[in-house]
Image (cartoon, rainbow, N blue to C red; front, side, top):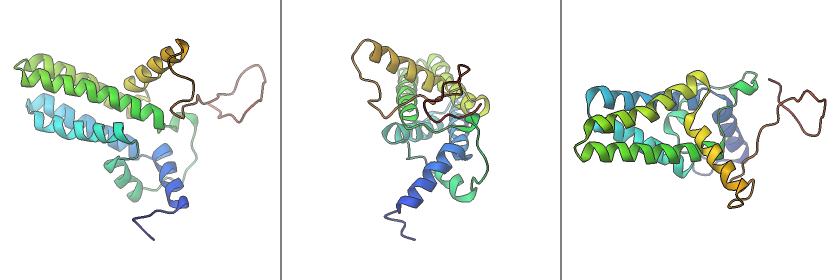
Length: 183
């Protein structure tokens, strides 16, 4: 097995593990844990770790050290449902870019001597990082998709510029024009 140059099968296996396995949930909970530790300890060093994890994902959604470690240790061999779809390249990058900006603003507030405001702002990405793996709702992804759709409607972006595509859900009208996931 060549670790430096992974084969196409290894790459597809990693994609499947990140999409449906528990790795990304562990990644999000780790990031949330660091932000919560920063808030309660009033120590930005914990926030720096979460900031670096988030920045790595904004650069490439595959740069997820905790998720990759979990994917190596815990193999996902089960069935998946639409509720298990967790890894979306465009959504992860967009949400992490938004989170990087919010975390940077929070850190800047603390550096400027406004610790209360900074730690309150830091609670926003911490809450989103907790909600994503537990409730399945990512506020950063929602804001990213909302912003992307607004830009597409205004004609400033064309649909699919970031390889995004909505997942078709089984429709009630019986139309079967593309493969669908069942809820």
